[in-house]
Image 1 (cartoon, rainbow, N blue to C red):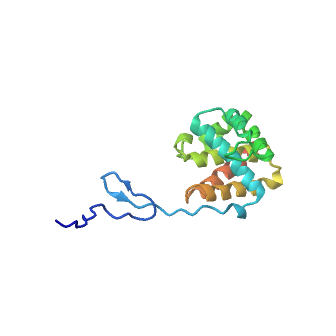
Image 2 (image 1 turned 90 degrees about the vertical axis):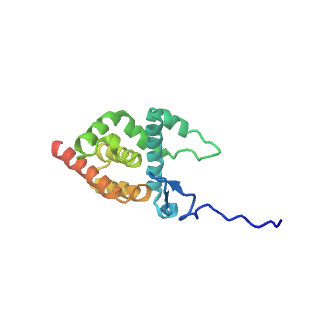
Image 3 (image 1 turned 120 degrees about the vertical axis):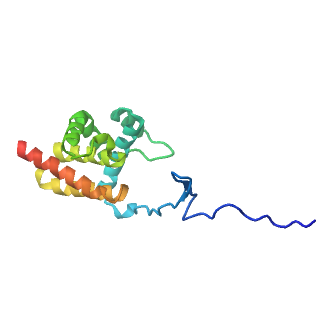
Length: 178
């Protein structure tokens, strides 16, 4: 008896990585993602991204944002300590979190806060806090642009337009009521 090789009955992989079963059991192809090059982002943008990470983690863990901030300020072997500016942004958001969530829920047409992608929610929360409660009037457009760029780097294809539009709407209403 000869040792003939057994035929490989597995289906070939589609795209990079392992295939995932779809709804009907078929395999789906992975999207090829290309990470954003962090060296092309300004240091203030990277600090904002680190603050967005804290809000995202707090949302995902359903933990108070200041508790996650306290954990992130400790330097560990896995990650560098949170930059001072990122801490300031999270501390700016924390006391007005409920107000910002109310405003986002009210003014995001057809998109309840909990239906938004979690990354967009974190970007919008931090962006709204900075635009409405800290940024000087002359810099608010630039700040909205920064959060739009963050959405472009971290979220879906449609997210930059959504983030830009909603932050601009909040700013317009804030200026109208002020």
